[in-house]
Amino acid sequence: MRRLLGAAGIVLVLSGCGQGAADIRVKGEQDPADEQRAEAVLRGEERITSAIAVFVEEDLLVGVDVRPLSRFGKSKIEEQLKKKMEKEFPERTVTLSGDLKIYWETEKLDDLKDDKKKLHDKVETIKSLSKEET
Image 1 (cartoon, rainbow, N blue to C red):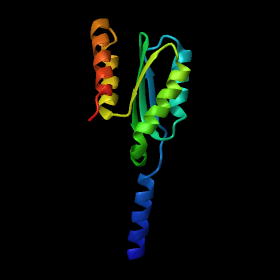
Image 2 (cartoon, rainbow, N blue to C red; image 1 turned 60 degrees about the vertical axis):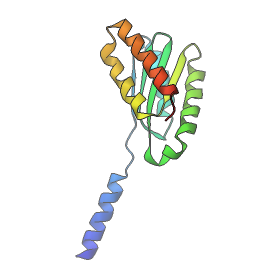
Image 3 (cartoon, helix red, strand yellow; image 1 turned 135 degrees about the horizontal axis):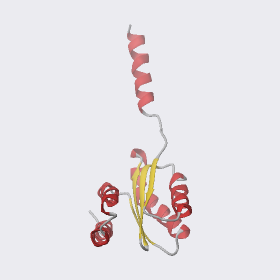
C-alpha cells in the first residue's frame, strides 16, 4: 500500500512539473510580418512562461513572465530579450519588463485600443513603471 501511495505521489509531482508551451500574444500591429517576428523572438526564449507584446505607434511594449527557477537571473533575461527585440525592431522604442505589474498592465492595453489619448497615457504610465526599481 505504501509503495502504491509513493508511486502515485511521484507521478503527481512529476506531472505538475511538466513544461507546457509558452503563451505568447502579440497585439496592435497592422503588419502581420511584424507580429510574427515578435512572436518568433519570444518563442525562442525557453526561460519565459508567457509574454504579451503590444505595438503602439512607435513603441513596442513587452511584458514577460519568467519561469520560477529562472527568476534569479530575471534581469539578465530581460536585458538579453530587450537586445534581441531592439535588433529585430530598430525603428521602435522597446520597453520590456519581467515585472508582473507591467505584464498585467500591458495585457489591459487591448481594452483601450479605441481611445488614442487614454492609450497613449497608459503607455507612458507603463514606461515610467518599468523604469522604477523596487
